[in-house]
Length: 253
Length: 350
Ligand SMILES: Nc1ncnc2c1ncn2[C@@H]1O[C@H](COP(=O)(O)OP(=O)(O)OP(=O)(O)O)[C@@H](O)[C@H]1O
Ligand SMILES: [Mg+2]
Image 1 (cartoon, chains in turn red, cyan):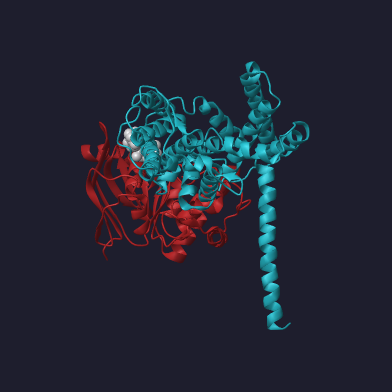
Image 2: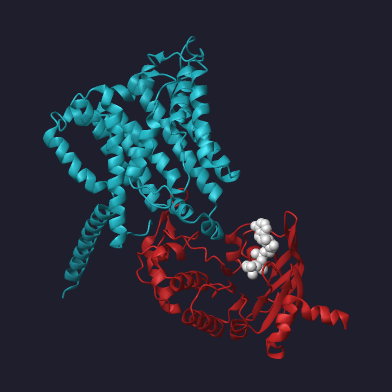
């Protein structure tokens, strides 16, 4: 079976800082992979490339065997990649439908006279939120009236809504309480079960990693360090690989 | 129930739905628009206590005096809603009408080209659009502070406006060009009709269009908008382009009304423009406000000037009173907003 997503020797640097150095790995269809690494390892940079926010300096992204060139976020979405960004990417002044359809508003008419189809967006929002079991205080309320958990749920609903095939979650529970975190984890598990969703999870939380992912890919200072099956690997080993202590020992040995 | 009855009821329900929606939106506007309560109190007071305020002739005056301010304020408000600022509109007004007058008029003081008004009127608006897009490019494309960019543009344009005619005023513009300033439809000057129609259409477009939504999104969180595939550069350039185009249009209407073009056209209107925008409820931080509010702000400020005129206040006090009134109005609005947010009356921008 050919993998759903192939990341092929991707490099990306910012000025003098090399955020990603020749990184390659695959994700199979329906697989959940945790991308692990310390602060500044390059995880969010990789996410931004997969989400079409910027282009790699070299290397490529292959989906279902086809080379991709994401020039803008719409291109990534068109390929079925949906992202929950580390910062959630919500507009505080827009309501739930406004945020759910941000940048892909439903409309009538032609450019430059595309007029919002508010009704349709509201209906779709109600359906999506109900489907994901997300509670939002008031459909008309701006997102700055939402609690942290509700905001997270909204950003999550946006990514899980559409016909997304790969769901990227960048530290989805970092800002959440225990209960909200458990809720996010349950929802991801359910999406995997029900829709065979492929997941790329970024987290610093080993418990969360184990609850969601089958496999961990480890980055350190922009380099691919390795990939481990979680059912065969201890937490200590993963931490060791993230920090580099283990790899150094291996190299010495 | 017979089928036709059901249909009739459906039709009625739909009608009632529409009425309800209109009523609800009027109610919402009343509650959420900071300027409305002030207008609702102030305008009847003016009408009751200021002689001639509520006469037809004065109303015509008032609308005419509001037109230029309205065009500039609506454009400036768009820029402010994206979280930027456009201080250059007065300069654009002045520069575009001066260049146009120079192109239309025999030499001297004109260029001698004597271009037709059918060319120069659209050209004046396009000059404004071009200036605006240049502003947008510098602000969003190059990341220069919008305050500096547009303030610099204001000075540059006001200076440049004086160059072609060496600061002489051009009188007696071609009649075709000035026609809108001297003709009316049912007693309403074409200047008023054009300015208000354009601003009303723009207000609807801002609320209802996809680009309008993007304008609010960028003002709310530009990074989030970008991450969701909205181009801040494109949107901000559109906004500044519209603002410049409105100023170019205002340049024409203003020159037509006065039948003259001068390098001092619009002098000092910048302050009033920003007072109208802020009194109209547009947040300085961006992401909130509507052109309906700005319209209210324009009406209030024009009324104040109009009233000061009518009661023949000593011109010595004019700016003092004007400034003080604006500060009081802004204070009232801030208090109202505090109260509204305490009662959770705030709502999403779009
Ligand atoms: N837009 C940018 N401009 C300059 N440097 C950047 C930019 N984005 C990332 N970097 C740098 O690239 C490196 C990788 O950053 P990245 O955000 O990908 O790390 P991360 O693995 O997501 O870390 P964290 O766990 O803290 O979120 C860091 O050194 C960071 O400073
Ligand atoms: Mg990160």
